[in-house]
Image (cartoon, rainbow, N blue to C red):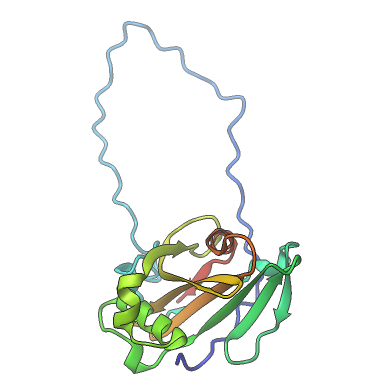
Length: 218
């Protein structure tokens, strides 16, 4: 099973400034017969990491370049979402959960360190499958052919820059989906399980992934 917990992110919501359109722009008068200028500029190289070594995206491959000091945790967006309420607070072991106000779905979160037996060197995808197997039972060989690759938001909500692994299941009267991401180089993982009695848990997961980002600091 996943082992040691990590303290939760104190800030519940990160707000970024919106990009506002420019107004009152002045357009230069260009003669109709002016020769076209040749573009001799060289595009700047795309940044793949910040100055402190944190990747700008977190694909499974990107995770391998994380510094050993990286601190990885959930950003809690449901704390300020009126459609959700706290079902169980953090138990000190990295577990907490929310429920929709109509009682149709729950979302169970976990974050913490993972054992060496779950870390597949150089493969965050396989390590993520190993975490799912540890929670659901069975072996990673059972999980991998039945899992798909999805995404969480990264640093702030509204993007799909963190690759994850997902599995779907059914039980009497309910459907659930589990999404996990583990980091083999750092020995840390996190997951969320969305369990619904009505509605589409995959759609609910998509909403959660949009507002609950994976936050990485050096």
